[in-house]
Image 1 (tube, rainbow, N blue to C red):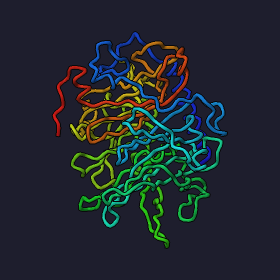
Image 2 (image 1 turned 180 degrees about the vertical axis):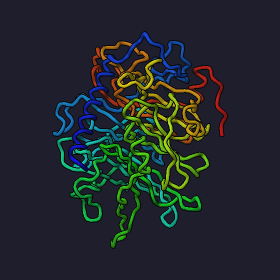
Image 3 (image 1 turned 90 degrees about the horizontal axis):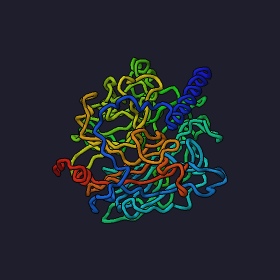
Image 4 (image 1 turned 120 degrees about the horizontal axis):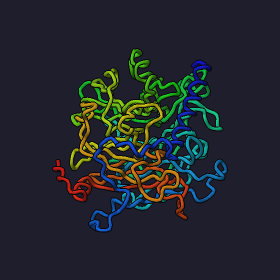
Length: 477
């Protein structure tokens, strides 16, 4: 990687970050212009006449708030961010989140009551105190001769923008748990120390010379792959990007060592798209932070991108050969335009549910540089076929999960602070959606949480949403 190009990109990222917080203050929002018409259902304020059975959807359940000195690395920190969730087989939900924005300690919390209350997991490895990036967490269910085995993995990138050394990405594994009816179930109670991959100081077999990969948001997605016959395998495709907005994949497998213990093996990262698409899409629109979701039939995967320039809608590509080749990128609808998408299917209705940080424009300002604004933390509801429709794939509706207060706002408005999203998302067998995000969820003058960026969970079911807003109920599948 050329130093000059790296410097230019770092400056661009710094400018983007400045723009982000400027937008959060409201200076880029022109209320006199009409907004793009989106069907947004608002859960940010509870109506006085709400059905008691629907009141739970309006509640912000606090996961953690930075009201104390956390660690020696973060003595004066009033910012918690970027959570990711995983649903365990016993019904517990784990969420991983960092102290600070792109720096500091990774924390873990557990909920045993479907996201209502949370308790921190203690005794985490010392290496969790020096992570640099938003953590991601996944549950791996093995098949074939390893059927019945399970692991949790937690990844954190090392872009090199913090005060800590390191490049590539770090991964920790949890194998603690119990066996139920022959199936091992992880509980996430204990974790291995982070192991570094693809830096110039990684262990033999995983060295990337001259800090080749300055990974950002690793793993933005981690997808179990299938073989030529359509059967799941014990291989997972992990995705990350770098400063120059190259998007890479690295395949995770496990090899048994001489003592019979599984050892992680990540393949050398490889760019996912053809070179001709890099200049035209990845570099031009700064495509990054992709989420991967399978089609309902399971024979195709879609990859949804954030467009970091904020001069286009979000993009999507498709693969029918397990990520070996991809279609040309195409833009998605305004309703799906945003950043850090996370997708899951609701098993009770078959609907596709996607959370994200919204990026919008006023009518007449579409895709103009620096004229975007945000509605904050949104959740889109629709079908996989909407992704195939591109710009026409509007879905059923969009839900505003909660209001993130910008500047000195005292009540929810259309314009919201965009420092939110990156939401963990789980959906259980009953259709209960539990999503966790970070943001300023309280007015500036709130004595408990004002001016602080903290982590909350929202809970909902799609047909409770439909019933509350007077919409036709989705049929069950």
